[in-house]
Image (cartoon, rainbow, N blue to C red):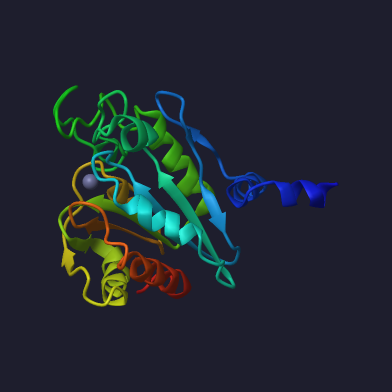
Length: 236
Ligand SMILES: [Zn+2]
């Protein structure tokens, strides 16, 4: 019976259930949309990939969708969050969440009050004021990923700071010249700022895709680079 049920269910459903079985938290946006991590494979090494956090920068979701269609890698767990901002990335097309908060200024590391409601980079009234950023902190604490990558647009660069620089540099080289690498300090209250200060041997960095959608011919190259980095893990 159980086997039959699994045969009836679609792969996304099965992966969703796998995430549940792995006891990973499921989040909800301000407007109640679910934020679901999807798990590919299992092993001692974890790569966490977020397709979209700024709703007006959605190109990475084509890469995360393709990544989810790939086979699991032996000994490696790839956790994909297509979007941590489903209201902004899927429904509203806005940089911020449904409160107008720039989630990538809402994390509790070097947080600073930036702008106000309606401002481009509104930090929110306080660190972790938003359900989406609180969820992501809970997810990272549950996963302890070796490497975290969040896609943005459109500075056309792989950028990192601090101990995440060697891993980000490696990722840029795995992309084979598609995007250059650049050292850049973390802005106030960003996700990478928080992760780089909160944990030890883990890398978290940003991939700024070019404007527009990723050309179909380039998607497999991003997927290959992500899978290879999942194997490599944290680079010292
Ligand atoms: Zn961005």
